[in-house]
Amino acid sequence: MQSFFENYLNNLQELHDEIRNAVKGLPQNALDWIYGPGMNSLNVLVVHLTGAERYWISDVLVGEPSGRDRESEFKIQGLSANELVQRLGENENYIHKALETFTLQELDKKIISPRDGREVAVGWVLFYVLKHTALHVGQIQLTHQLWEQRKQVVRRRYPKEKG
Image (cartoon, rainbow, N blue to C red; front, top):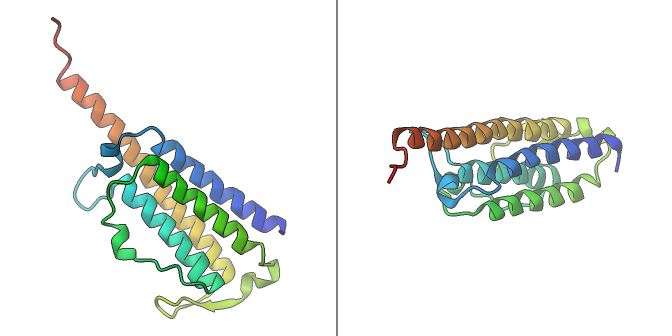
């Protein structure tokens, strides 16, 4: 594999590691918790970003239908931290295998997105995947922080009574 693609995979893995750190050890109710209207839970964010990664690499770059159901990604509930981490690992393995076949000369190659018929370059897809994942990593980190802050506020409001 050419070093560009190795570096790409390292960047993706670093983003995934940030997600692993954010969800590790959280209880189920934290993974499904939503801060407010129009916001998404950690479960939704991880399932959505892994669905998007798989779509762009599999459906668009490789030409293998992923069977992605984008609508259902935003309704997901009940996954454990281990299940979310497993999804990240599966994507990393798939993307690694997919990128083994690509060369630098193909970065400018034009391909068609099956979802909307838009013409994009291979390089654009790769950078879009990183950008989209990074955006949601930030949301995941913020949601995790809000969850932790929520617990502290509850403790301050309702301290344990002394017996």
